[in-house]
Image 1 (cartoon, rainbow, N blue to C red):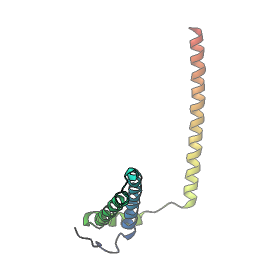
Image 2: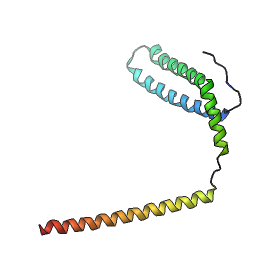
Image 3: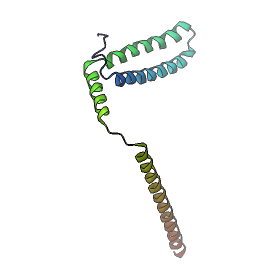
Image 4: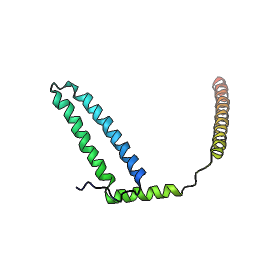
Length: 128
């Protein structure tokens, strides 16, 4: 297992943030492990085991992020994201307003349809 940075400078932010998110998940998991190990009397075991797990998994994440196949995928993904034409703020606000209006209209339509069926079925049940 080799610990060197593959294609330094390419896909930097994608690999950095992917590694940071993975390491954050590892840290939370090790904190939970530390909490579970509080029943053990030996202070060395309950502190060094989570720290060791965190260190080993952190090195594993570093190795995986710099592995050739994974790094090439992240580099190409970052390149594709740079090609995306993002909507303007005005377009996003207009689209959001349309979605909220349609959802509200559909909710009202479903509410009144439900009320109509309730009245119909109450009327049918009273007859029979």
